[in-house]
Image (cartoon, rainbow, N blue to C red; front, top):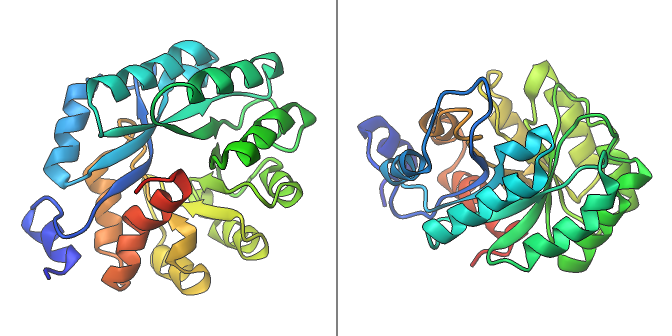
Length: 257
C-alpha cells in the first residue's frame, strides 16, 4: 500500500483510504473570492476527498434558514458528496428548536454548527441545542479561536453525552489550552481546521490525545483544501493515525458508514 505522503508528493488524489472533510462550508462570505459549488466538488475529486460535512456561510451573518437551505441544496445536487450541519445560534433562541427539527427532517443532516458571536456556549439559551444533540446523537461543531472556548468546556462538562468538536484547535498560539480541555473532557474533540500550524503541533496532539479524538477539516472555500490536507499528509505520524484523522474519527461522530 502506498504511503499517504507519497500521494501528496506526486500530486495524486488519495487512494486506498476514504477521506471525510469534517469542517467545510457552502456559499460565500462578503470578503471571500467566489468559489462555485461545482469548483468545490472538482477540487474534492482532484484530492480524493470522498465527502464533506458542510454548513452555510449565510448562517454566519444570521440568515440561518437560507444558509441551511444552501446546505440542503448542495446535498441534493451532489448525492453522496455532502453531509449537513444545521447552524443555530443562542442569539436567536426561539429559532433553535424549530430549525433543528426542520433540518434533521431533511436527508443527510448529521450535526449541529454553532458560532462564537454574542452568546457564550454555556449560556442557557443554547440548552435546547445540546438537548437535541443528545437525543439525536448529533455531534456539535463549535467555532472557537485562540484558545477562547467561550464556555464550550462548561457546556461539554454539563453534557457528557454530547460530542463537541472545537473548531480551529491550536489557533492563536493557544494549542496548550485546547489540549488541556480535551484531556480533561473525553467528549471534546480537536478540529485541526486552520490556515497554519505550529511546528510539530499535530504530532504533539496525536502523542498526547491520540488520533481517535482528532478530526480534520478544510474550511473550504475559506481555505484551500490542498493546503489543509497537506499538513496532515506531511505530518510525522503513522499512516494509521492519518487515516483516523482524515476519516475514521469524523465518520464515527457523524454516523457515516
